[in-house]
Length: 80
Image (cartoon, rainbow, N blue to C red; front, side, top):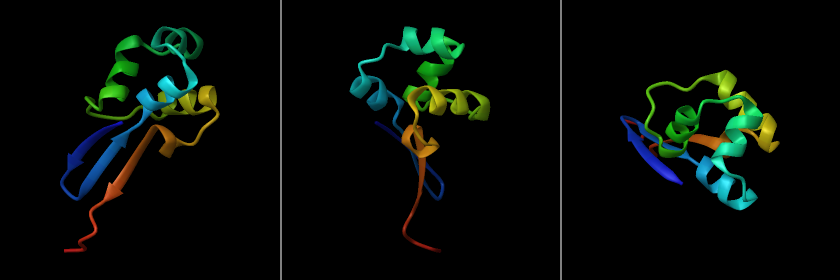
């Protein structure tokens, strides 16, 4: 799981955990979801500028999970 801090909270990128827990390779996901290898690597590492909802939908369908199982936004507790 990768934590990326942003101004008012942070994102948790969890795809690596899903791959590990399901014993699924990036190459298999890439082939079976028709998703570019670099895109999958960026979602795993959190090193991306925007999230493509069609890619996230394909991953959710493939792993039969919800979006927050792949990436989750957690706001800071302070409301200032």
